[in-house]
Amino acid sequence: MTTVEAMIDNLYGGRLAIRVERIARALDVSRSLIHKEIDAGRFPCVKVGRCKLVPKHELMGLLTGEGKASDGGLGSTDDWLVAVLGEI
Picture 1 (cartoon, rainbow, N blue to C red):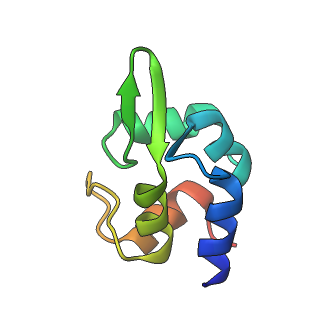
Picture 2 (cartoon, rainbow, N blue to C red):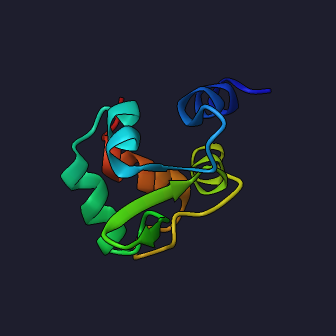
């Protein structure tokens, strides 16, 4: 298990999906940024009523490079991460 996979398993704690607020805290970005990325189609989520949930497999694929950030103009997952998180 990679470090990213371990972090995601810990973050989700047995859940299949978690709220945007927890994702934002884990990535150390604002909730509004995550909502903006979801609305732009660059961050995968499932809407349940007014609640936006991020499925575990979607975040895992996005952060490990096995999935893709629903390409809303940003090419690769790396491009998306740099755009959202900035260069570290």
